[in-house]
Image (cartoon, rainbow, N blue to C red; front, side, top):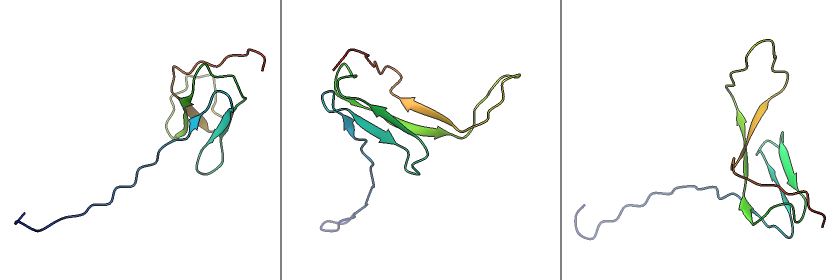
Length: 84
């Protein structure tokens, strides 16, 4: 670039909502076809969690896929069943 010239790029970033331990919350797909609800005080700590639809899934016979398959992340998420 020559001195004094500038360039601008716009990048769109989607930041997932943090599920707060004390309040709980829900994560959803954009198309509203899947969601996961976390009741209050079921997470050990505040977490960012996401849900994604899987388009290709290898399933071994004799099991048949009869519905969409979803991936919830992070895989290390720990949910507790301790009372409120």
